[in-house]
Length: 402
Image (cartoon, rainbow, N blue to C red; front, side):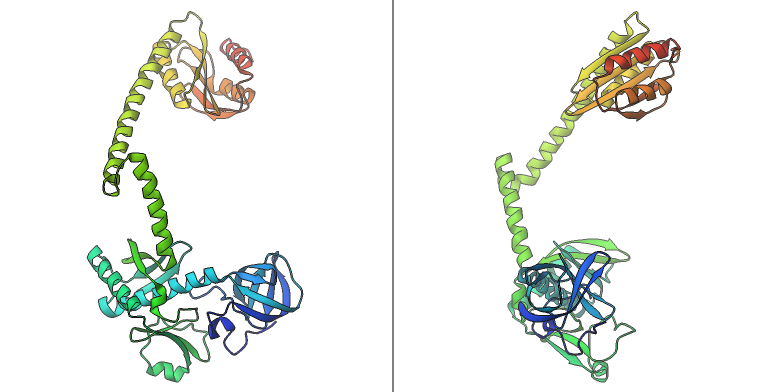
């Protein structure tokens, strides 16, 4: 098995390098996932909180990069053969991740140095990122101060550099670190933001803080006695702003309002909608009671009815009212709403019908399934084409026939 070269791979030597001629020294398969091991790579393997880079090996897509058993595996869309090839980095993804990762170093350093909040963990997500700070509560004023401090360092264009030191040199330096892995041996890689931070890290970073462009703290969440701070940086801020502006534009047109009034108007619309739903609910109850009264007035001990544009809940309201008014009745109620069909079998306390047994057979006849208790068996029907057969089944069940 091929070992990782002792020297730094290309993604660490020059994180801005986007293409590299490489040798495929081994091709393999990992549980149905073809992969290639190369003599060098510009693609970062997932680790240290940073997601894996994507790219291409020749024309073959690379969808994941992982360190496995001492080698860097490039997972491919299809298998490849050993030999020379051109490796190409997905630069858009890489630069985005470098912006987020460098911003994380900056935020964590400032949170500790300026405010005394140590970073317990961090996560670079696909849309947003977060750091978990050792602070039980972070008022918005303090978060704004942290964001302002970060933006001041972005404007200052602090140099970002990397270097390797021996364990003896490392012991003499002041380094922000949660500790080295127990298995670590050899030199230690440091990432430094000039005058701000020195941290152990194997990831890819920007040349200066100016390339972060912008940092925006979004929100917080209390977590394990600390606080998770969610944020975005760089191009993600611009993309997020563009999304918000497009959404606000649509809402302004929809509500015929300006931005400042959108939340208020949306709240009023929701309140109006809730009131309308309550009115509809009351009307449905009145309608269900009226339908039940009409069914109860029938001389037939077995009744059936079909309703349009209602659901199973309405059928249950009709059935309960019916059984209260006419406990000797048995009923089959059906309904359709949009593309769905519903059925309900009901038997009053004085009816000979076994609602559960007959209901199960009717459910099968209608290509559906259901359940229930208290003299009611209801569910969704696959089709109501055999509704007449279901009514006859109900009548036989009420007469005690199979």
